[in-house]
Length: 130
Image 1: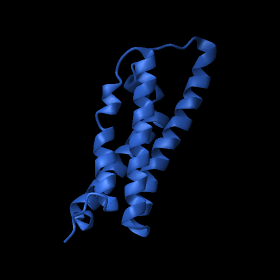
Image 2 (image 1 turned 45 degrees about the vertical axis):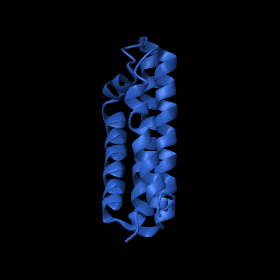
Image 3 (image 1 turned 90 degrees about the vertical axis):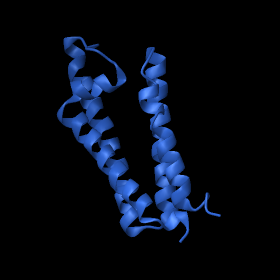
């Protein structure tokens, strides 16, 4: 059996989907806690709190979308589509880390898991089969 056909990598798709969906729900339900992932302490003035809360809902919806997209491509799509979606999720982690770096620190909290997504995506796509 080729590495890209391993059930092990399908399990990664399920796990990554659950993690993203969980982070998204956290953003919507607890926006202050979700902001702490970017090391943004309470930066808001009273008039801006509603705007930040609304933006965290958008951010949460993005994470939920990523999780559901992984599950959909896992169950209804091809292995190559699943791998491509994992690589795209890894790219989002790079952008999230860049935002933390612009803030001053915390980038490796995001950049640390990006390679897991990218490598798993490449394996699932069959790029690393021999």
